Image (tube, rainbow, N blue to C red; front, side, top):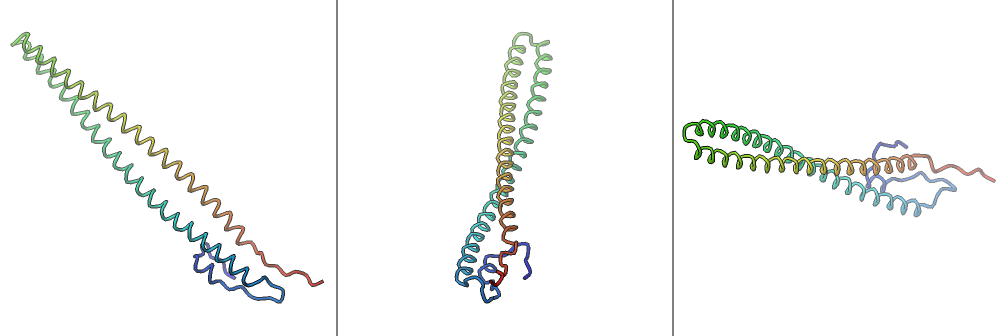
Length: 168
Protein backbone atom coordinates (compact mmCIF):
# COMPACT_ATOMS: atom_id res chain seq x y z
CA UNK A 1 0.00 0.00 0.00
CA UNK A 2 1.45 3.39 -1.04
CA UNK A 3 0.81 6.22 1.43
CA UNK A 4 0.74 9.72 -0.02
CA UNK A 5 1.58 12.78 2.02
CA UNK A 6 -2.06 13.93 2.01
CA UNK A 7 -5.12 11.79 1.50
CA UNK A 8 -8.37 13.26 0.36
CA UNK A 9 -11.59 12.44 2.20
CA UNK A 10 -12.81 10.56 -0.90
CA UNK A 11 -9.61 8.48 -0.96
CA UNK A 12 -10.09 7.62 2.69
CA UNK A 13 -13.72 6.63 2.19
CA UNK A 14 -13.12 4.58 -0.95
CA UNK A 15 -9.98 2.74 0.22
CA UNK A 16 -10.37 -1.03 0.19
CA UNK A 17 -8.34 -3.19 2.54
CA UNK A 18 -7.18 -6.66 1.65
CA UNK A 19 -9.21 -9.31 3.34
CA UNK A 20 -7.70 -11.99 5.49
CA UNK A 21 -9.02 -15.00 7.21
CA UNK A 22 -9.11 -13.39 10.63
CA UNK A 23 -9.10 -9.78 9.46
CA UNK A 24 -11.03 -6.88 10.83
CA UNK A 25 -14.74 -6.53 10.37
CA UNK A 26 -15.29 -4.74 7.04
CA UNK A 27 -18.22 -2.72 8.34
CA UNK A 28 -16.20 -1.46 11.32
CA UNK A 29 -13.34 -0.49 9.01
CA UNK A 30 -15.72 1.32 6.62
CA UNK A 31 -17.44 3.14 9.49
CA UNK A 32 -14.10 4.21 10.89
CA UNK A 33 -12.85 5.37 7.49
CA UNK A 34 -16.05 7.36 6.96
CA UNK A 35 -15.61 9.03 10.35
CA UNK A 36 -11.97 9.83 9.56
CA UNK A 37 -12.94 11.19 6.13
CA UNK A 38 -15.64 13.42 7.62
CA UNK A 39 -13.24 14.77 10.24
CA UNK A 40 -10.60 15.35 7.60
CA UNK A 41 -13.12 17.11 5.36
CA UNK A 42 -14.05 19.45 8.21
CA UNK A 43 -10.36 20.20 8.80
CA UNK A 44 -9.87 20.92 5.09
CA UNK A 45 -12.81 23.35 5.13
CA UNK A 46 -11.54 25.02 8.30
CA UNK A 47 -8.02 25.28 6.86
CA UNK A 48 -9.36 26.95 3.70
CA UNK A 49 -11.34 29.38 5.84
CA UNK A 50 -8.29 30.18 7.94
CA UNK A 51 -6.21 30.78 4.81
CA UNK A 52 -8.82 33.27 3.59
CA UNK A 53 -8.72 35.01 6.98
CA UNK A 54 -4.92 35.28 6.80
CA UNK A 55 -5.22 36.79 3.32
CA UNK A 56 -7.79 39.28 4.59
CA UNK A 57 -5.62 40.22 7.56
CA UNK A 58 -2.58 40.63 5.30
CA UNK A 59 -4.60 42.96 3.07
CA UNK A 60 -5.63 44.96 6.15
CA UNK A 61 -2.04 45.14 7.29
CA UNK A 62 -0.96 46.46 3.89
CA UNK A 63 -3.70 49.08 4.07
CA UNK A 64 -2.50 50.16 7.51
CA UNK A 65 1.06 50.44 6.23
CA UNK A 66 -0.17 52.59 3.36
CA UNK A 67 -2.08 54.82 5.76
CA UNK A 68 0.99 55.14 7.95
CA UNK A 69 3.04 56.36 4.98
CA UNK A 70 0.35 58.88 4.08
CA UNK A 71 0.31 60.15 7.65
CA UNK A 72 4.11 60.46 7.68
CA UNK A 73 3.95 62.50 4.48
CA UNK A 74 1.20 64.66 5.94
CA UNK A 75 3.23 65.20 9.12
CA UNK A 76 6.28 66.26 7.09
CA UNK A 77 4.14 68.63 5.06
CA UNK A 78 2.54 70.07 8.19
CA UNK A 79 5.96 70.60 9.79
CA UNK A 80 7.29 72.23 6.62
CA UNK A 81 4.21 74.42 6.46
CA UNK A 82 4.68 75.42 10.09
CA UNK A 83 8.32 76.30 9.42
CA UNK A 84 7.38 78.36 6.35
CA UNK A 85 4.63 80.16 8.22
CA UNK A 86 7.03 81.01 11.02
CA UNK A 87 9.61 82.48 8.60
CA UNK A 88 6.92 84.50 6.81
CA UNK A 89 5.52 85.73 10.10
CA UNK A 90 8.95 86.90 11.22
CA UNK A 91 9.43 88.83 7.94
CA UNK A 92 6.02 90.43 8.20
CA UNK A 93 6.66 91.26 11.86
CA UNK A 94 9.59 93.43 10.83
CA UNK A 95 7.38 95.56 8.58
CA UNK A 96 3.93 95.37 10.08
CA UNK A 97 4.96 94.99 13.75
CA UNK A 98 2.35 93.81 16.20
CA UNK A 99 -0.42 92.85 13.75
CA UNK A 100 1.90 90.57 11.77
CA UNK A 101 3.25 88.98 14.96
CA UNK A 102 -0.25 88.10 16.17
CA UNK A 103 -1.24 86.71 12.80
CA UNK A 104 1.97 84.63 12.55
CA UNK A 105 1.62 83.23 16.07
CA UNK A 106 -1.97 82.21 15.36
CA UNK A 107 -0.91 80.37 12.21
CA UNK A 108 1.96 78.64 14.02
CA UNK A 109 -0.37 77.47 16.78
CA UNK A 110 -2.82 76.09 14.22
CA UNK A 111 -0.02 74.29 12.40
CA UNK A 112 1.25 72.82 15.66
CA UNK A 113 -2.25 71.62 16.56
CA UNK A 114 -2.51 69.96 13.14
CA UNK A 115 0.95 68.42 13.56
CA UNK A 116 -0.01 67.14 17.00
CA UNK A 117 -3.22 65.61 15.64
CA UNK A 118 -1.32 63.92 12.84
CA UNK A 119 1.30 62.63 15.27
CA UNK A 120 -1.48 61.18 17.41
CA UNK A 121 -2.99 59.50 14.35
CA UNK A 122 0.39 57.95 13.54
CA UNK A 123 0.71 56.62 17.09
CA UNK A 124 -2.81 55.17 16.86
CA UNK A 125 -2.02 53.54 13.52
CA UNK A 126 1.19 52.04 14.94
CA UNK A 127 -0.80 50.61 17.83
CA UNK A 128 -3.35 49.17 15.40
CA UNK A 129 -0.54 47.73 13.30
CA UNK A 130 1.08 46.12 16.36
CA UNK A 131 -2.27 44.68 17.44
CA UNK A 132 -2.81 43.28 13.95
CA UNK A 133 0.69 41.78 13.96
CA UNK A 134 0.10 40.23 17.39
CA UNK A 135 -3.24 38.84 16.24
CA UNK A 136 -1.58 37.40 13.13
CA UNK A 137 1.23 35.87 15.19
CA UNK A 138 -1.32 34.33 17.56
CA UNK A 139 -3.35 33.06 14.63
CA UNK A 140 -0.27 31.59 12.95
CA UNK A 141 0.75 29.99 16.26
CA UNK A 142 -2.67 28.39 16.59
CA UNK A 143 -2.49 27.19 12.99
CA UNK A 144 0.96 25.74 13.64
CA UNK A 145 -0.33 23.92 16.71
CA UNK A 146 -3.26 22.58 14.70
CA UNK A 147 -0.94 21.42 11.94
CA UNK A 148 1.30 19.71 14.52
CA UNK A 149 -1.73 17.86 15.87
CA UNK A 150 -2.76 16.86 12.35
CA UNK A 151 0.79 15.71 11.53
CA UNK A 152 0.96 13.69 14.77
CA UNK A 153 -2.42 12.17 14.00
CA UNK A 154 -1.28 11.39 10.46
CA UNK A 155 1.89 9.73 11.78
CA UNK A 156 -0.21 7.56 14.05
CA UNK A 157 -2.47 6.65 11.11
CA UNK A 158 0.51 5.72 8.97
CA UNK A 159 1.80 3.16 11.46
CA UNK A 160 0.83 -0.33 10.39
CA UNK A 161 -2.16 -1.18 12.57
CA UNK A 162 -3.08 -4.43 10.90
CA UNK A 163 -0.89 -7.31 11.98
CA UNK A 164 -1.50 -11.02 11.79
CA UNK A 165 -2.29 -12.65 15.07
CA UNK A 166 -0.36 -15.86 15.62
CA UNK A 167 -2.45 -19.00 15.23
CA UNK A 168 -2.91 -20.74 18.55
